[in-house]
Length: 341
Ligand SMILES: [Zn+2]
Ligand SMILES: [Zn+2]
Figure (cartoon, rainbow, N blue to C red):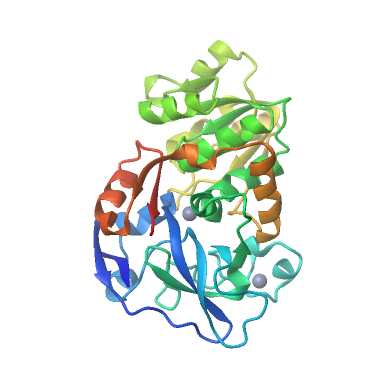
């Protein structure tokens, strides 16, 4: 089969790999769609020795159909349409056992991040059955790839913040997660203000229903926001991971607001705490989404006619992997997605 591999700083190749065979308790998924995520860009920009020295296939947004079953697999059959929950967890800890797998305390390497857990930038992928989520008939494979990581990552903080039609929501960062948060928050009834330095991303957010977008390079965003909404935002979701964006969060929201942090860019966070204290803000972290919420998210998408693929700006075959990563890395497009025959 064909699969991608990172071979140097911003260097990716398409190469042949042996087709995977399922181990006991695993299936092989034939990929039909796979997304490139912001978190794929960290190892692309700064590959670690682990990545360069091992034969590692990136990608953690897999969606496809089951092509082969390992021994002992029950409840699944060849042809089933599936999304892969890419975070590999222990299944034993109290969090795994109570529906909070996303915060498992014994996490193993995620798919796409270890030699024994090859990722989705390949024609086939071996997957443990515990990682399979059923893709409903009413969603496409591209929808499934978007849901695998980014749509769930956008939905979960909105749900935890209790986003509703009473809210003015600030969306900090208009990459794919911010764009998905924009369209989902609109479906929840909220009004949205989007913030991103990229003009093309701001235009995309406006097309998805953001009623105001702000350019943080054009002056203090708090002042820009209050020029239109003097009281500030009711809630905020931070998706960019940028320290500059973190620095102004407290200035964008009203007292008593809820703030969800999703984006992880730098290992050294510098969120000024003064405004959090003075305004009695509530800060929550969210880490992807629990797989137990997958059905709810799918049904939300269906019932509110959310067009997940409206955030996709580029589709590529896997053979165009190098170009696809270049475009995703430039951070001025919508989502970049591989599709497979
Ligand atoms: Zn992702
Ligand atoms: Zn666990």
